[in-house]
Amino acid sequence: MSAAVVTGVRPVGTPRRGVTAGGVVAAEWTKLTSLRSPWWTAVVTVLVAGVITWLSANASSVDPGFVPADSISTGLLLAQLGPLVLGVLVGAGEFRTGGFRSTFTVVPRRWPVLAAQAVVTAAFGLGLAVVTVAACVAGVLPAAASRGMTLDLAADGTPGVLVGMVLLLVGLALLGLAVGALLRRTVPALVTAIVLVFLLPVVLMLASDPLIGGAASEGSGLTVTGTVGVLLPGTAGQLMTLPAGSTGMDGAPALGPVGGGLVLAAWVLVLLGLAAVRLRTRDVT
Image (cartoon, rainbow, N blue to C red; front, side, top):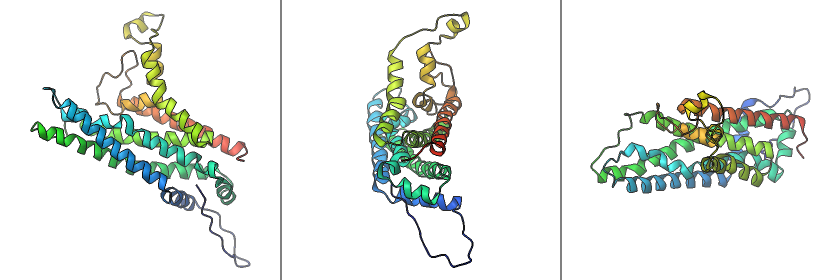
């Protein structure tokens, strides 16, 4: 991403004004929204979410026990990749193009740039998340109508699921930003994020390694793979899309939607902190 640098002639005797936090946020927002890639990522994310939800709901509607609200979150299985890609592009984009030189010349303290990127990524991700969830809801409606059923978004914990879906997508966008800012290279950052969010949970799910030891572990049915798996950002984030009181994953601690959200938030904060430390202490060339 190329930085927008505003230059001008300063009258003699006029004190130099520093760059404000609002100015940095506005500049980062302009850089994000002026590129085509975030908008294309958003469009594909919304379309994928709607289509997959529609396919899943239609397949489930033949079941006598079909509940339309149960299919709402199915569209996120692939659609969550979009916000992750968006975040990586924001975090690593300027290092790929060399635009960071102009940016850090204007903002030499560096960390306000990362903070501004987090703000604009969260804002753009929030808008994308709301539209994506709306597409998921719309994808369920045809299957519900074919069964003469209505989709009640205010009952049986559905509001919490919808909020969790939105927060999951925003959290993944920020996670992608953190990985991109930390690694500073688009392709390695994207591969790392995909492995962390998608591949590792599948590998751990396929593995089987029961905990060895005390009666408490045996009684709880915990496994090493289940415990580690639920602490990964992708798996923890998925818990946010479950209704309150859900049992969660076999062999894993029962974190619930709130616990899953806290785990995802911890990943984001830790990785952003590491990116900020590297930004301040290491050369950016």
